[in-house]
Each structure stands twice: as C-alpha cells, then as structure tokens.
Length: 519
Ligand code: HEM
Image (cartoon, rainbow, N blue to C red):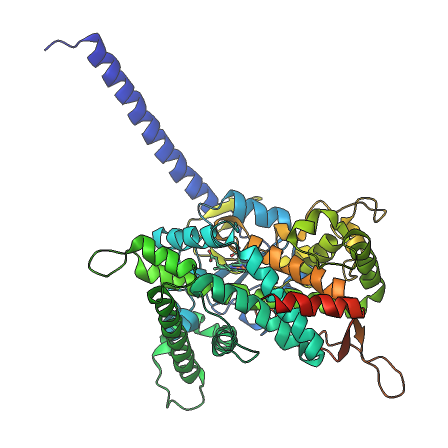
C-alpha cells in the first residue's frame, strides 16, 4: 500500500495532535497529583471529625473571618465536619479565584435546609452552574442590566415620586415608604403588577419569603449531618422539620402567586413586562411555552433578589445622613447649585452630581449589604499561593473585610463621601470602587447591578433635593441615637430610626405634589 504526501502529512499531523493530547493529559494528571500534595491554606486548627465546628460563630461569620485575617492572612481555610470552606478576605484573592478562574468557581453549594427541606432548588441563587442557570441569567440581564428592554428608569422615577409623596404625608412611616419603592418597580417590571398602598400583599409576601429563607441559614448544621433531614416533625427537641415545612409552604405559595400574577397580566395583554414579553416570544401553537418554568423562576428571583437588597442600601443612606449632617448639607448644596429649586433630579443628572454619586458609592461600602456575597462552590481541585483548595469547597468572599480594609479605605468606619472625589482626601481616590465587590464576582455577579445602582441614585438624589433628615430629640433636647443595629442575615436589613424627615421648603413640597399629580 502506498501513501501519498497528503496522507503522510495528515497522519503526521494526527500523530502530533495525539501526542499533544496525551502530554496535556499527563500534565493535568501530574498537576493534579502535585496539587494534591500541597498543604491546605492556613486557618484555625481543626479537631478530628468536627473540624472547626466549635470555632464557628452562629452569626456574624464575616466579623470572625476579618479577625482571622490578622492571624492567617487573605485566604483562610476552615472545615466543618468534612465540609471544606475557604474565606477570601481580600479583593485580590476574591477576584483572582472568583473572576479569573470562574470556570471552576461558579457553582453553588447544596444547602440541606434551603434546597431539600424548603425546596428552593429552582431559585437562580441556588442553581448549580450549567445550562439552566445560563438561561436564567440571560433573561435577567436582558431586563435588568440595561433599561432599554423595559425603560425601567422612567418607572423608578415615577415610583420615587410616590415615595416622596408618602414621606410628605407620613414621614414617621419612612421605612415602609422606602420598602415599597424597589418592590413596586420590580413587580411592575416583572409582572406588570401595580403595588397598592403600603401593605400590598405581594410586597408583604416577598418580605415574608426573605425572612423565612434567612432563617433557614440558622440550620447549616444539617449539612454536616444530612441524614437528620429525614427526622419527622414530632421528633422531640428539634424544630428544623417544622421550619423546613413552613418554609416550603411559603416558597410554594410565593411561586404559585407569582405565576398567577404574571399569567393574569399576560392574558390581559396589558402592560409590557418581563414575563409578558418572554411568554409572547416563547409561545407555541398548542398554548404552551418554551422554557416556561425558567421564565417564572428567573422573574421571581428578580423580585426576591432586588427588593430587600435595594431597601437596605437606601435605609443605610438615611442612617448615614442622620449620623453625618455635614455631609447632608454638602450634598444639598451641590443639588441646589446644579439642579436649582424648580425641578426634581433624575438619573440623567448623575454625571453633574459627583458628590451625590460619591454618597451612593460610600453607602455601598460603609455598610455592605451582603457581607459574604453569596457562597460559590469549587467544582475542581485548585491551587492558590502554593496551597491546595479541595474540590467541593464552599468559597466565601468576605466583602465585610474588603470594605473595611484600612489599606484600601483609610478610616474605614467613617462615612466619607469625599474619599471618592479627586482631591477630596489627602490619600486620594481609592483604587477599588465599592460597586466592584458589593455585587459579587465572576459568573455569579449580581444580574441586577445596574438597576440597583440607578434606583439608589434616584432615591438618594430625590430625598436630598427635597427633605432634611435629622435625629429626633428627647423632651430635654438631647438627640436620640439612630438605630444602627443591622440584622445579621446574609442580606443585612435595617429598621427605621426615630428621626424627623421634613421638607426643605414649601417649594420642595410643592414640586413633590406636582410630580405626584402627574402619575
Ligand atoms: C443594592 C442592591 C443589590 C446588591 C448589593 C446585590 C448584591 C448581590 C450579590 C453580592 C450577589 C451574589 C453574587 C455572587 O454570588 O458572587 C447577588 C446575586 C444576585 N442578585 Fe443581587 N444585589 C442587589 C440588587 C439586585 C437586583 C435589583 C436584582 C434583580 C434582578 C438582583 C438579583 C440577583 C440575583 C438573581 C442573584 C443571583 C445570581 C446568581 O446566582 O447567578 N439583585 N446580588
């Protein structure tokens, strides 16, 4: 049999390719074996079987991890009954692993209470990395990363007028007015649903769901002893089966109510919203829809993911104003000089209001909303700084430590918008903006970041333009300290303070009434 030159080159090429593949496989195997020989990252010493279980705090893990940073450094390894956990205490480490190596750091851990007992397996936040998650994120990006699909900026503006009007009427209920704002915009964006009043059933339901899913994190010990999940509710001395059942009922109620709300809107073919657009695009002739479950699931998570987080950011801003009247005055001076007294600010003013922008950025840094972002999950063994990171590790980015790192943010506990203004402080503008970590990392970065940044700016600028926020005073004239007691859930929340929120002038009040009247 003779061989042509072409056959020869082809077979040579084939052999070279084959050799390349074999060498790569050997290298990967060698690397894997050599990685396996590396030590684990530093961390508190572990006991046999239970590991670090006894050193793990029941809440505020982010604060404990920030203390550990002083002793062990940027990367701290802990293990609880065999569950490896890596805490990343610096932006460099978080960005190197979660952003740059996102191919293996983008899944989510399986949580017994949340996934198995409460049944949240369909939630975007809990999905393992894969095709379903990608579809969720594609839909969410389309409607939340740019305002083009739904013109959400206009809606944010309109709902802000409702909030301002509420603050004029019942300033003592400011927490409820703030709470209503993000929920009202998202429910309209997602389902075309119009929120009614301060006690809207959908807003209340969303709030209930978040309380229940936050509570579920108190039961992380079930992940160390997963067989416990089979214990019945009547078993003496345990309450997690009941918490699991009630959580599941709330989750199911939430999902079915959301689907019913969205379907009603779609059938009424009224306002354009995320679900009506997606259903129309995916409708089949037999009346069913491609990816129907994914459409409902992703939409529900926009509502759940976007409401409490944005509320906490706006409540934090109000707290910052209560504690820092001088910053409030400076912000109002900027608004007066740029906008004047004849109109309300809006998003298009952002670039001409650098101090207001700085307040928004500082708010996200000063009290981070998600101190540990959300846990990522490592799917393949990895090596970092000479340490082995086992496959199956839970990876926590410690945004609390990053936001309070004095090397990045001198005097980190002070609320200092000036630090974001060129020439505002002697140290100069920090290299790392809060927006670059507060919304998470890599392929799981928050899909609602732009939407959130826009509503925070809109709310902050509008409140500062029209109201002055001051501490309430005791009958003897002593100022009452504001409430800065954040609830230590994974998404931190903050209740209201005793304070006065009064219109800056009659003109400001009139502007609000006029804007409200146009709705
Ligand atoms: C101030 C407001 C907000 C903050 C601080 C915030 C922060 C975060 C953070 C830290 C994560 C975890 C990212 C990671 O795992 O690395 C996240 C995930 C998420 N956020 Fe937000 N978020 C906010 C608003 C919103 C809004 C308005 C939406 C509406 C679409 C939203 C929807 C989501 C969803 C669905 C996820 C899960 C993404 C995934 O698992 O792939 N968030 N957010």
